[in-house]
Length: 249
Image (cartoon, rainbow, N blue to C red; front, side, top):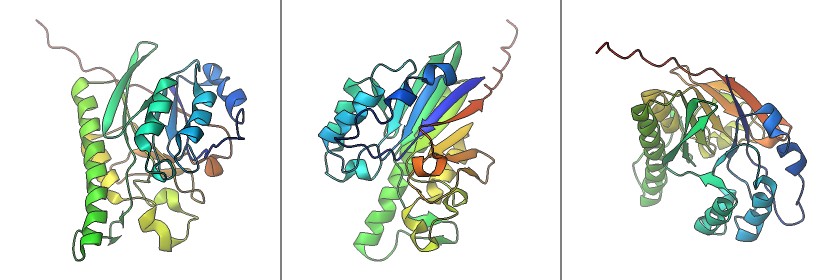
């Protein structure tokens, strides 16, 4: 059994030092890894990222993250990523990481994702250049997640987790005004997850949403935005898939 701790939308900045550190220091007793589902800062500055780094540096479990829209606001995502990486955080964007957790290989595929909406109520790559660019960016993010999950499938990891900031399903948006659903996620992310397969999908972004959802293909989706889970992190238990038997020599 692998214990996955996750939280998003912690929105830290100077003055918030030590807010989460006491809870994070207990992770070794409750979890095997920590996932950060974006919006780690308020405005995406390196100074704010340094506060996040101070909260997670040297924790007893690996830390894997994606950035969110707030982390891009200052147009310095590379610097934010570098600050977090220096503290030992693996920051993903269209990439995957494989962790060996007590003998189980756990793969995390990460991408920020983007908006666009959901089946029957979504944008399309048609019309004005601005609309085309919006939807093409959403597809690019989903394609990055698909490739990263594919890498994990090819590697044969015992568990696969999809980590995004934007939501792949509308289920976890219940409680958010319907008018803003197209800006909270995209069905393209769920298509990528279902096409390759995953054991869990984790996202943030929807502060007024709900925790539990599921893709059309049956993958569990969890909204771990801190205002939703109302604690420093939520923990989910995953059972590794049995390895396929090797053919006899």
